Length: 190
Image (cartoon, rainbow, N blue to C red; front, side, top):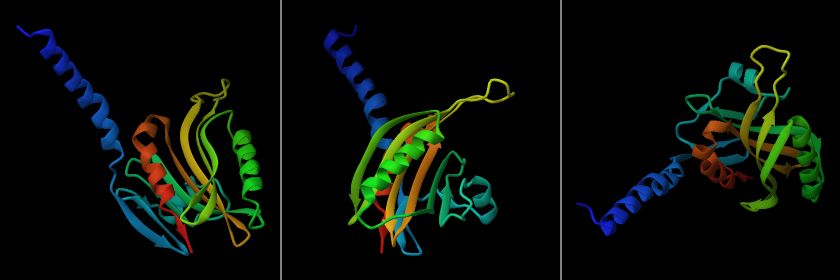
């Protein structure tokens, strides 16, 4: 017969094993350093660079991305791109306001968890972490809503806008959220 003290210890052990350990495991993705143009950053080892055809199909920009990576299941994407907008060096707060409004216009619903100016390796970035939703059109077949997780940061480089965009399907958010933060905090621009 198990006494109540032993039962309590067993319960605590299982709670720890199933609730605490998975939280720590998800943050342990192995990162590797990549460099291109004047940028260096760390990305998950399991990411692969998309080829030109994939880039054109997946990118929403008319400009070719500087780099576009995905995981093996194509659930997660990381893109680095230049945006058309031009800015003065001190305009990071204005850039933040403009891009926040732009994000809110693109999606039907946006829930921000982070919206701030953050210094990353000596450079100011407008940082947004959020969950977005685009509602489907009830008049169209197979047109359900799409909910995704995003971690996007913008910075000003030589008067232009550089965009680092991490996104995942909503069901993968918890698995990738910590890694997204590590990726973005590793960005260095010369």
